[in-house]
Amino acid sequence: MKFWTKITLAFVPVLFLIGCGTSGEVKDEGAAGAAGAADTGTSATTSGVGTDGAGTMDATSGFEGEQLDDPNALISKRVVYFDFDRSDIKDDFRAIVAAHGKYLAGNSNASVTLEGHADERGTREYNIALGERRIATVQRILTLQGASSAQINSISYGEERPAALGHDEDAWSLNRRAEFIYQR
Image 1 (tube, helix red, strand yellow):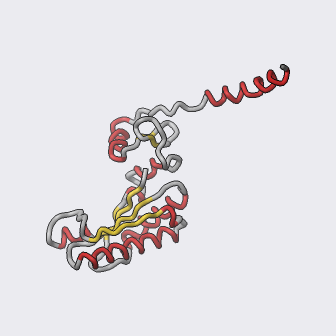
Image 2: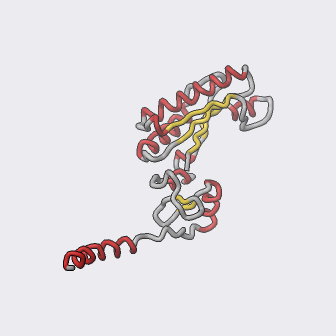
Image 3: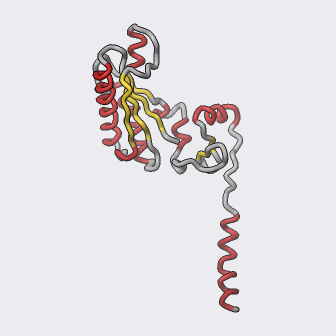
């Protein structure tokens, strides 16, 4: 009998500490926070971990999702544009790609899908290959910054998913791009 009493007394403080953990309640973020949560499909909790709206943690909980939504952070910029028929990163976008690489390196449970796109000029096959070259260039920079290749998925859509409709340089320049799509 003394044995079970000692065991019970040993676990009571542990159970008490477990019961005193955070409740996972959503904090009041105001209109700006609510708009950000509506855009991403997640909401911030008191611990900074995202939920799926039903109060359960999503598969990537634990990485700094709030940093992804900070409009002042470089990683809030999720599109890299390319010159016609080119797959090299323009100087204007090098810092953005590097910031995404550093973010992934510092958040090993974060993952991203890189989408490659092209404008409507060229054959379907050529544009898919061009989209692949563009995302390969981005992926190379991400891994040089320390991101794991296991964190990065890629798909090329070629000309199939235009960002802008039209048959002029304004539309084409918006369609020559690589996009960062973070999984939540």
